[in-house]
Length: 166
Image (cartoon, rainbow, N blue to C red):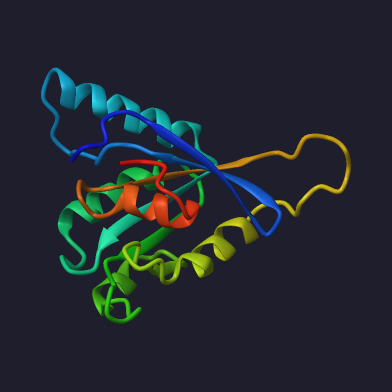
C-alpha cells in the first residue's frame, strides 16, 4: 500500500522498448482525499497504457476482488494478461486462475525473478517487431495493476533488473 502515484520505468527486451507503469492498488470503494487521488492515478495508467497486466497473489488464490478488477480492466478493450505472483517455491499456477477467460496466465516469482523472462517474451511478442530504420522506435506501455500488496512494484523491479520503485 505504499505506491501512491504513477511510476514509470523503461526497459529493453529483445531489442524492443517497453515502458512499465506502476500505480497504486486498485480499490473498489474509495473515500475522499488521498485514496481518491490514488485511484485517479490508477485510471490514468489504465487509459495511457497499450496493454494491461493484472498481478494476483498465488498465496491468496483468486479472490472476488480480483474478479471485479478484471471486469473493470475489460472495459478498456486492451490486451490483458494475468501474472500470478508469489510462486516462490514452484511456478505452478493454482487451478482457480484458469477459469478467468484470460488467454495468458503467467506464473512469476518477483522475489526470485523466476518467470519474468517468459512474461517479457509474451508481452513484447504481442506488439510490433523492432524497427531497423533510423526513425525513433515506438515504445509499448504496460500498466501493471492489481490489489494492494500483491507485488506490483516488486515485479517491476524484477523485470527491470534493478530497483526502480520502492
